[in-house]
Length: 214
Image 1 (cartoon, one colour):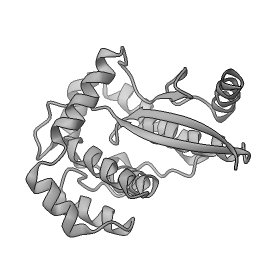
Image 2 (cartoon, one colour):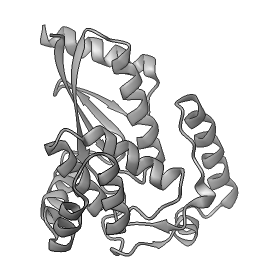
Image 3 (cartoon, helix red, strand yellow):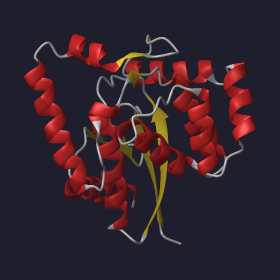
């Protein structure tokens, strides 16, 4: 048995820096083979007020970034950083900015069945590489099925609105706890790393958290 370490990752599935941060945490953990990590996804919504059917992403991003050149520069930097982690970002393929409540609920249900990581990978790739609508229950059922979950269970739970309040409450708790930007990783319940830090810095945080627990 390796040394156990709880890693809470507060993140959103439509946040490209969160995709980077997720992959970097995973690769940092792989550099510590004596570690027994428990990575728990904690929901955060960059925009909880988006309608369930989503909105046009180009118009939505134009509202956030008044200068198109700045948005282009951000996307270019992300494409380059993503390539280092094996991530293919295709921002032009993304038509919709979805409300992510349903995607967070799917991750929650997957966690309960030991399928969390596969669902997170599936959601990120579906959105950032394939440009799919991860607010659509059918898309979510497909992603869940690919990770080994029962798609009819996913459709039923989404239709019933199961855990919608739970996600809203967890998001509110993160905001009340002072989290204003994601990804936000907490190692061993004590040490926080904000943003998509380098693998080296994350390994350092892991070692510090382990030393504090010893």
